Length: 246
Ligand SMILES: Cc1ncc(COP(=O)(O)O)c(C=O)c1O
Image (cartoon, rainbow, N blue to C red; front, side):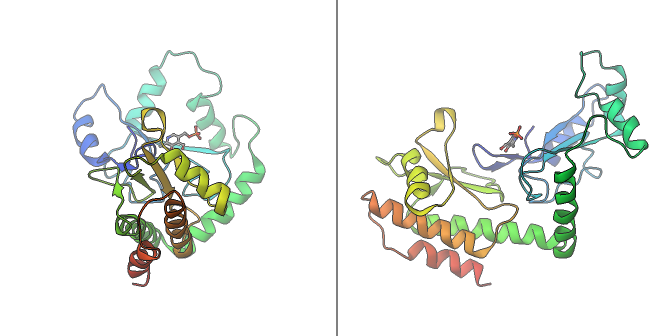
């Protein structure tokens, strides 16, 4: 399962799924926490999550290129018995190497040095504060777009990693995010697959803070106004600021 589903911006209830899965000896739960770990609390051991995966390019604030995985005792037993052919993704070989302070293949040394710095920054900020920052940025983004008259795409459990916004009727979500980039240099994202054109997405995870949200909401207001959507400039920004000033 995904803990935070990036294409729809929905946070799934990982603990509830794990509470079911952990009752079965022949089943393990593999959690894609790529946009969840370091954004909101994922209690790997307490919740009995067997395999939890993240990547360097999200909350860890690095370029893409490193992946991280935790493996429970229960999952190790599955790895011991697994017969699927494997070469690169051989967890056991990786574990044997780790015990010697080595990696199975040549590791991305530059990224690991960057990771040390990212972890230093995270330790300094403190995990609880990191979760609070993400929750504050997410709330400000939601309030900001709603104040412009837009609707959130998730009807419940919106993820604190990013916000998916439904494009207003008659407006192309792809055009909204492309104009953000082309006119104002703001990187957002469109919808994927059948959501293409129907939504656009604003990320607020990792190396993100107050003025990233203000910039994004301001950009959305200006792009939409330029496309002929009726709104009062500054209303979204004001609503976001009301949250961010706290
Ligand atoms: C929840 C989730 N899973 C998987 C991926 C894919 O990660 P990668 O492109 O590093 O394979 C992403 C990337 O955005 C993601 O958000």
